Image (cartoon, rainbow, N blue to C red; front, side, top):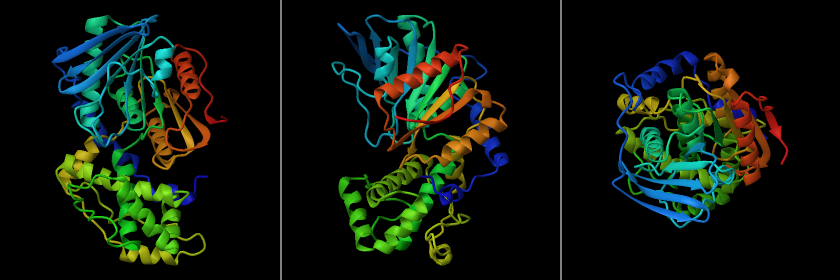
Length: 401
């Protein structure tokens, strides 16, 4: 269940603070300048395979690997798909069949295109323009689709919202699967603050936080080290679980190591530390008493963000909430990586922007990050397509498996 302190700890920012950086990003979005659309790129190399299932093409476009799949009985419509956060480079093998979140679209006879992005990590800066370049290349080679939809999972879900805010015209609608939607700085500041709290309870277990060493890689050994520390101090582990809203030590060990990698990723991308926890109020460490909260807030180490690095994180990405097309968001009721408090903040932004008619959120009654069945993804996609074509609006709320 969602705990109240999870919502409080996220510290919703004022909407006025959100708006300006979003406008700046919109004005300078790659491919949307006043001079008109950029030229359609040409792959530096590619391979095409024809099989009983259809056509598969892989290649390299502007430094980013890509994959195109066109089913044998193509319905002449297209799904642009964004993958999630990747610690290691994503690669595409021409002989491998689609088996991930994109499979239900292909089975419904849609062509599917996806970019690996030229950089790993929180690659919004690269992912949006590189995927749009792939979409334009697809049109040049295979023709203008009758309909185009956008979909993605986790970080890819955030990119669905980014796309439908920045460049909705080519699309009829979008499907956000377990998306880390909303302002990057809210989500990542919270993760940074939780890692700082972990250092208070478990000093010396993890590497320094500012800066995180470039050699840190989030390995199984790192997660095991955190897990062993949690088991060795049950009281401190309980305080951290209460603070983060995570259900067990395994989730917590995973996230502490994962969050550390994300902090490193953003520090390297931003050219400095973009995180600031000076005004972060920690609460919820103990359900029975606020005493632990007072001590944590007094003694936890506080960090100051570099203004230039902070500006980078605000730029990539602070939403406008101006969804230009219908977007259906599908999540699990407990997600140890993307917590539901993020969705509530984004829904507020969409309502303030006057685009609430374009957002429906559904929750599967299950635990886990992106833990959907292929049927659930397919059903959600079908509902979104009907809605985007003028059919009934999907019913929001909890869906029973």
